[in-house]
Length: 228
Ligand SMILES: [Zn+2]
Ligand SMILES: [Zn+2]
Image 1 (cartoon, protein in one colour):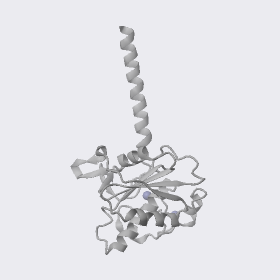
Image 2 (image 1 turned 180 degrees about the vertical axis):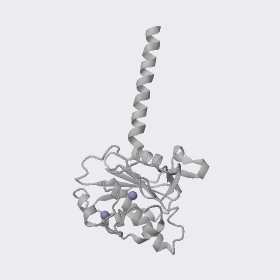
Image 3 (image 1 turned 120 degrees about the vertical axis):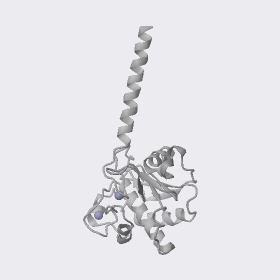
Image 4 (image 1 turned 60 degrees about the vertical axis):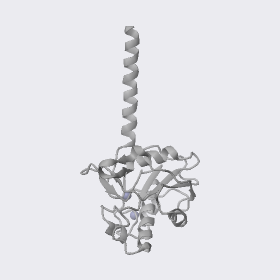
C-alpha cells in the first residue's frame, strides 16, 4: 500500500516535470513586438534542402488570400507552397476578455496540424490575434512566428485599419507574411536598413508601410540554402 502511494507520487512528480519542461520550451519569447515571437522549438529538419510550406486559411478569411500569397511567397522565397483545406480556429486559443485569439496557441495548433512532409506551416486569419510581451499581458499583433520554424500565423485584422484601398491591404498582408516566414527560416529582426523586410515593426503600421518587399544583403546571407 505504502509502496503504491509512493509510486503514484513519483509518477505525479515526473509528469509534472515533463509538463513544465514542455511549457518552458515552447513559450520563451526572444523578442516581442507587433511582428514577432521568436522561440526555439522543434526546428524543421533538412531546412537547407527543398523546403515545403503548408498554407492554412482559417475560417472566415478572404478566400482570395491563399492564391495571392502562394504566388507572392514562391516568387520571393524559392520554396514550394501548398494550400491545405481551411481550418476552424481552435476554441482553446480564444481569449474571451478581448474577443481575440492567442497567437502562441495558434502556432502550437498549426504545428499539430502540420503534415510531416511539410517543413513549415503558415496560418492566415481575419480574427484579431495577440501575444504577451515584456510590458503587456495581452498585446494585439499582426503576426507571430517561431525563429527557425515550424509555424507562423498572420492576421489581416489590424492591417485593414486605415488601409487606403485593397491594394495597400494586400501589400501589407504580403509583407507581414514574408516577414513571419523569414523568422521561420531563421532570420531574426534586422536593423541594417530601414527598408529591410526583417526590420522590427515596433508596433506600428507605418513601419510595415515603409518596409519594402526586400531583404538586405545581411539577411539574404542568413537564409538557408535553396531559399534565395
Ligand atoms: Zn518580426
Ligand atoms: Zn535585413
